[in-house]
Length: 126
Image 1 (tube, one colour):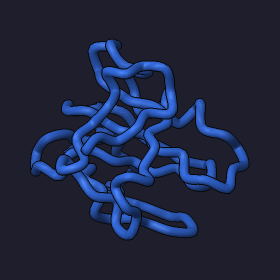
Image 2 (cartoon, one colour):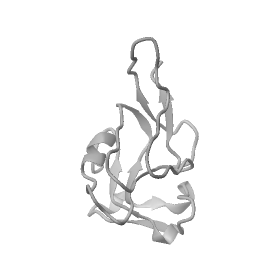
Image 3 (cartoon, one colour):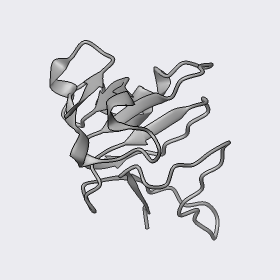
Image 4 (spheres, rainbow, N blue to C red):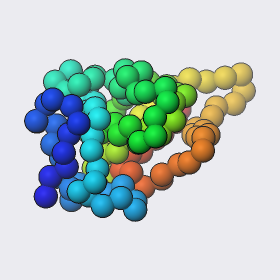
């Protein structure tokens, strides 16, 4: 089975067995954009992909993040944005090496919902 891609690039099709998105059937997952560092997909940074998400939407805006370490602070201030990727440990990491005075926030996630098992890992920059 394959996942359909909402955009125009057919090479962004992804095997269903590579991940799961909780209670959604694989046939129902449509990817809006794909991120890969080398620039061969829709975007080369997670932040650029988030910037294209609608400010108001009733459907999930699905960002598929391909293999790599993305050294950027990621802030999502838009509703219904979902990151997905293969469920292989160490496959991709989003990291932010920012340090504040005498403390570091390793992981802060705030919002209306959080899907923890989407295959994306996060780590502190220290």
